[in-house]
Length: 69
Image (cartoon, rainbow, N blue to C red):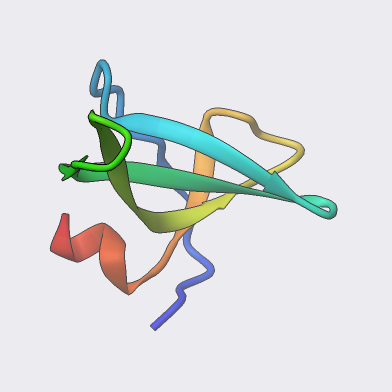
């Protein structure tokens, strides 16, 4: 359930990243890494935990994954 109550974006070094799609910027949380044997390196696995608020860059609107992770 997507709430309209803004929360502070977590400050976890190496775990939080941002992905911009169209006009919306999503907050992603690194959930793990998966080894790719063909290319011989690990690939990050991420989950979207919310949507960044344009007018307040330190805040976001969380989704269901926010509570999970």
